[in-house]
Every structure is written in C-alpha cells, then in structure tokens.
Amino acid sequence: MIIGGGPAGHSAATYGARLGAEIVLIERDVFGGAAHLWDCIPSKAMIATGGALSFLARSKGMGLEEVSPHIDLGNLGERLAGIEAKLTNTTTKVLASQQVRLIDGIGSIVDEHTVRAVTDEGEEDIFADYIVLCTGSRPRIPEWAPVDGDRILTTRDAYPPKELPSHIVVVGSGVTGVEFVHMFRSFGSEVTLLVSRQQVLPGKDAEVAYALEEDFLRRGVNLMKGARATGLERTDEGVRVYSEDGRVADGSHALLAIGSIPNSELLALENVGIATDGGYINVDHHCRSSVPHIYAAGDLSGRLPLSSVASMQGRKIAEHAMGMHDLPHRHLDYDKAASAIFTEPEIADVGLAEADAFAEGRKIRVTKVPFSVSAKALINDDPRGFVKMVSDPATGVILGGSIVGRHAAELISILALAVNAGLTVNDIVESLFVHPTLSEVLAEAAE
Image (cartoon, rainbow, N blue to C red; front, side, top):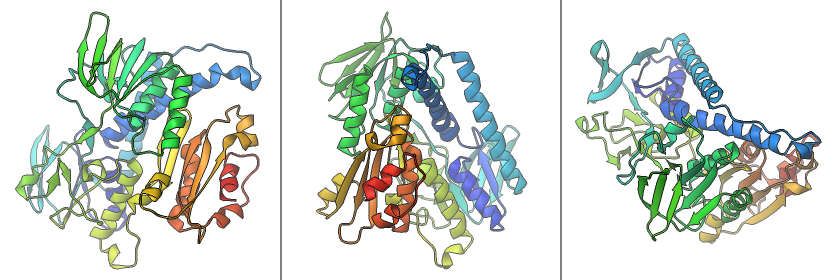
C-alpha cells in the first residue's frame, strides 16, 4: 500500500509490480506528485521560457538581427497545463498497465497493517503487508507573511503569476529562490533578493555562489545581503518586506521561497508510534521507519529533497520489501547524488565539495578550467562559468565536482557516473569526447 503518487510512490509501485507485488496507490492531488508537477516541472518550464527570451535578447552575438519578444502569460499558462496533463496521463497509463490499483483520495494509517482510504464515495480499509509513505511537502509560510496569492505569493502561486510583476521581492536565497530570481529577471521584472546570510546558496561552494551573484549583479538584480526577513505587508503601491536589521524592500509583489514542510499531519502516524522529527519520518538506510514494514520516501523522509533521490528510494523500497536485498546490492548513497540549479548560468554539483574536504582535513586535488577555453562555448556565444573537479591526489579517483555554465545540469551526469563508479581522472582523460562540445572541458579538468 502506497500513500502518495509522486516520484517515490510511482517508482515503488512500478518496481514492486515488476517484482510480482499487488499494489494499491492512493493520491489526494495529482498522480505524478504535487511537488513534482506543481513545483519542479512548471518552474523549469518557465525557466526554459525565460532562457528563450535571454537567448533572443543576445541574438546579435549570434549574427542575427536583434529581436524584442514579449511574454504571453496566457499562452505560458496553457503550456504549463499541457505539460502537467501529459505527464499525469503518462504516469497513470504506466501504472494501470501494471495492474496497479489507483485511488483518488486521502490515506491514513489505522494500524500496523491497515490503511484507510477516504474518497468522495466514502471510506475503505485496506490490509497491506507493507506500507510506503511518500506524501511529499508544501511551501513553508511563516506567521509574518500574509500570503494572498495576489501580491504576496508562495512558489505555487507563481506558475505562472496572474500578472507579470514590475518589481518582485524574493525572500530566500536557496535553490528555489535563486531560480525565481533568474526567471523573473529573464521575464523583464525588476528583482530584489533578500539574502539572510552573506552569500546566496548557503552550503554551496563559495566560488560557485560568487559566480551566480556576479551574474545577478550584471543583470541588475538588487542583492540585500545579511537581510533576514521578519515582516511582510501590502501597501498602496504593492508590498513591503522588513528585515531583522531594519532595512526594507519595496516592490509590486513578494515571493516566499523559504523552504518546505512535510505533508505528514493527515497520516495518523501516532496510531502506530512512528518516530518523526519536525514532521519528517526517521528512516534507516533501507528507508524503513521505526515500524520495520512501514517505509518512508521522498521529501517526507527528510533526506535530499530531489525527485531523482525520491525515485531511487522508491525503487530500493520495492526491492527490499520483495526480498531482493537478501542478494548483493548497493545501498543508496545520498552523498553521491547529483543536483542542479536551473539559473543562468546553470549550476550543478556532485560528491565531495572542496570546502567540506578542507574542513575534514582531507587531502584532495582541485582542478578548475573555465568554459572560455572551449570552442563550443564560443560557438554558443556563452563562455561563462567553469568546471571544478575534486580528486584523490594519491589514486586519481574522482571524488566530486561542480559545474557552472551552460548545460551544467546535463554535463554533471558525467561526473556523477565517475563518482558513483569510482572512476579516475585518467578514465576521463582517455575517453574520446566529441569535438566540439562543452564536455571536453571535463577532460581538460581531468588532465
């Protein structure tokens, strides 16, 4: 029995069915996952639209006449709805083809082997040998933020916004926050970003964060560093955001991008005594909760909030429940998960970070090569960014790396494969990459 039809639930259902399990999947919002289809996918689709605008704005550098396109929010909304519909339809068709029973409703735990499904038709209690909980998360809204979906927005109110903000104040400089800064600036909005610390992307490589800040400043973004938001109100002209140190930021709109909270309050976890931490379910390396046959995955597990991680968790859960882990297998290693930020330039990283290695006193070799040496980058008229590779100086094994630049989210897959497979820098050097491509910069860094 799976509660939650996002990437984790879909993956657990798919792999469980392949292994011969009878699967029931209940979802209250949208099959494919609310966080996935209402957050991740529309944000990336809007960023792609912004990227098209940015490309056309610099078309003169490609030998073309300058053009001045304008965004059509109506068409953009239809585009987002179309993408969501196609993905949802694909998800449900795949699950139905595997004889997975799908229930539109809310699931909760009655006892250790019983889940109650509440639908428009009534209630149904379903017995299950194993239960998988993957109900995702939703945007966090602090008490001081009177969100109205009109001028004061959460991320889900902005796919797309009702109107294009003339000046938007983004609160939160993590991954989601900087993506929205990039997106709205690409659309032509003035943007102010409140950064609670002294760099955007806290926890990321400082050099990577600096590269993004530099690009934001070049594009006219107003960065308010050390400004922790404590209040937000509507004004006659728009909105005003107050920071802890007394500074204020005025704009036509404000957008909150300050994290998420788990959707666990309706699961009735207390009925079986499942251990939690701040609403997140504590799990072991098999994704088991404190009740061994009840698993948790995705955002609800409190691990890396990435769709790729959620999908792999779902697969590992299905394998474990069906006895596959009695055979030799690989555990999911969260430290080797690749991640990306879809700003312009894109940012991606995987494995051991340079700062973390130094903090641990670990000996590493760090090599960095700018994209400006790449013929392909010059062909693309976009030589921004660099590749940074972290390796073991004694063995040459690749431990991690960061990429800033065009198509970083695609290029990081090469480093992710190297990190997970224990490849060496020499393995990369001796690979014959296509020329001219941006991937050649990886070989340069390895060499």
